[in-house]
Image 1 (tube, helix red, strand yellow):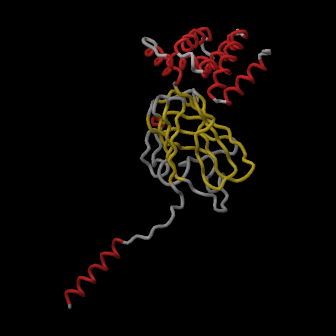
Image 2 (cartoon, one colour; image 1 turned 180 degrees about the vertical axis):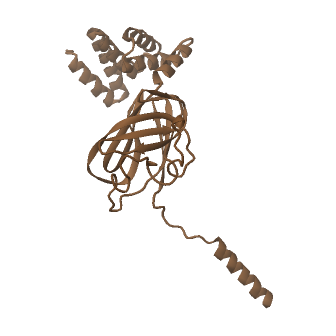
Image 3 (cartoon, helix red, strand yellow; image 1 turned 90 degrees about the vertical axis):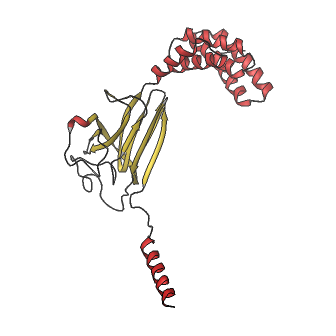
Length: 280
């Protein structure tokens, strides 16, 4: 009987040691992954909330270095080399530190990411890039600290920082054109119809050599004459090159094929373009 009591007591003690009360984190961790052009960008940061407090100029003092969030460093990882402001930054992971001000913020991308808060000893040699960003007043308070990647384009995006009634944005550029151009040069040794199509559309959308785009899209259409979406892009490329007659012909062919395929979205797109180009 004594052994049973002893084992029971030991079991209860084990449960007491292993038991843990789980409560919500006051500043929850956020991980955001975003493809910008052809570059992977990842944000990891903690999100404090206003909770009725005065934030900038009070809880977060002006003109003092801030961890930009809560807990461990807020970090951003670039899968490829980027340009932040006017500074070339290598692919890698960087801590985001800021020095908030009433009118402008200084935003730092710091190579040492292993800090809880700001570094005990700041090292200017570890600053990969620094940007001075204007502050904008929000029309209403945003309760929880937020960072995001927005205004996405083929060649860049904006890192946005929002909390309470303050909004700050920092633009960065990615090397999409270099990567796509290298891919085009490599693939065009033995291209498929899809390769010609992709290269032509990229040239159209980025404002590159429209005559080259025209040559590629013509080849793509020749190789796959049933692809009404090819002819749709062919019409847009012809229009961009100034060949309205060719654009109208391609749009009409695309519309007929889209109608037969039951894709009314493409029918509507072509009708709209034909009207803009003054087709009968």
